[in-house]
Image (cartoon, rainbow, N blue to C red; front, side):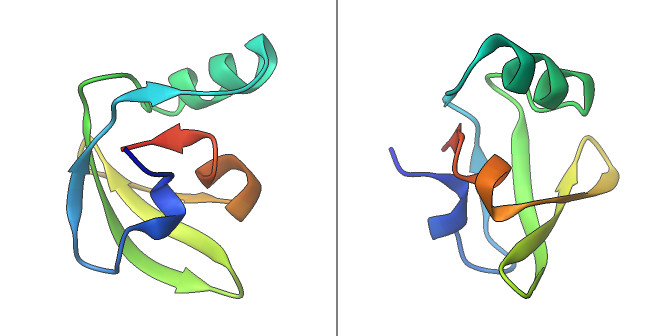
Length: 70
């Protein structure tokens, strides 16, 4: 298990868990990042990620992506 930031562009991974405080977990859950969901990296821009989750593109910071364990 590694943070989402270690995933390469185009790879699809399954979310194992979300780390961090309750506010961060709630924020990511509201965006669709829940355990068991599949997530793929669309692109990386200046360290931040654009990911595909539940047929939706979402931009997240590297800090947030580090809290998502795949």
